Length: 137
Length: 138
Image 1 (tube, rainbow over the protein chains, first blue to last red):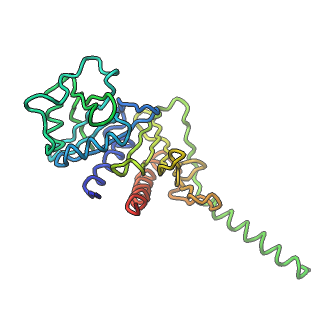
Image 2: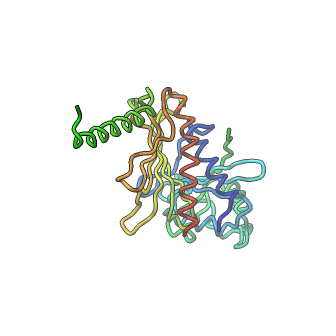
Image 3: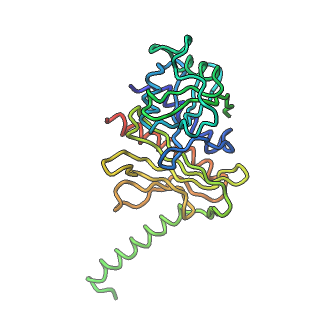
């Protein structure tokens, strides 16, 4: 499904990385092929859509999420790259359910500083971690 | 006196000179020096199945964009195929179209490093439009 808001946000990320507030920002996640996949999402989207997007780029991604007031960046990295064992494997009591939004999922990642394993969803031993707010120009 | 057979050849030579001069006139003074510059690259998928993407390769010096390449790529059985490519060589930012027989199309003349940032804005718009059209044709 085509979402003009997602297209606009994708463009905003690309411009900020090339000549905006993120010119000095090092993308932390590298794919198996040596590239740096940049995946974008909106907080109000379903988390299932986001997981599908991450799966499609190989399971590892530099994830940018647009909310109503802020943009957050999350690293989706291989389990083997994570220094600490992920805090959660999406089995806790307050785990985001199938109808959860991307915003709820990122909030959950923030509550688990060592990361949240999402291997089963993305087909790779992956975890989402290091959520941080990024400022755009 | 010019013979009738030579007139055609003269006209052809003149047309070639004019075309060449016109092409040269869109080329500016700027030449990017990538030596010691910081290179970064990233891929921006344009659909949920990651079948169309933009690939960005940028060079910065002291946080200033000095050069870039933007590739519009589609996934094929052989891997990623670049269908259109934008770059900043030879003093002009230009598009290399999918048809290799066609001449590159100038997007912007480059005379100073400031022109590179302006050209990037134009290229980002064009590349976005192209990727969106390919995606929406599905």
